[in-house]
Length: 276
Image: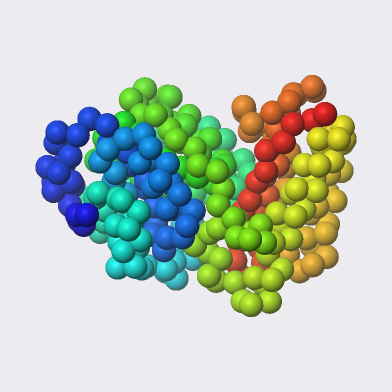
């Protein structure tokens, strides 16, 4: 496995590649990331993973400075998983000029975007830059970041990028907590409480799947229980999988998305469901 830090070296290494599969990350890897390497390996070659903590997607007062940087350990995991190239640029290599797109991604101000202004513009900026650098045929992203995946799939369509997007299911701990690099910020007590978020999403999905279409009541019930147990809820929302807007009457493919703070840590999760 090669560790590469510059775009020039990366392009040289990939000059003859036609079926590159790419997994972008911010590092501090867990088994969910590795499952995306496995997914990518089933579709293309060589396998490239990037490690870059993107400043443009962090807002004022967020956790950019304390986000874990664990490059050596990450590279060991990636090599064991069969990754061929790790691209780990510094900020100057990634951003000769630190700026985002002038184009605002659709739905960038909804859901997580309503609470993290500019976040998805920063995500779209770094991913498009990485796509230009790596020029992959395949790119793998996890469904835990459901809105991010939705926005990036839209970006690929709008820019007519010749990239096939691969979707990995959310990796979970045995107690159901969605795997996240931010889980390491949780205290022991918070970690014991954290699986409640997924349990409530499962309960909400069960209500919908047994015919309950009072979506506002379902959202409110789940949010109230989180608040009673010390969480600070940003949103719990039933949306269309197709549009990420409020579902039309009779729509079948739905997703329940949630974001809430437990102590200083913001957790997100989602579950797909279909009404009875």
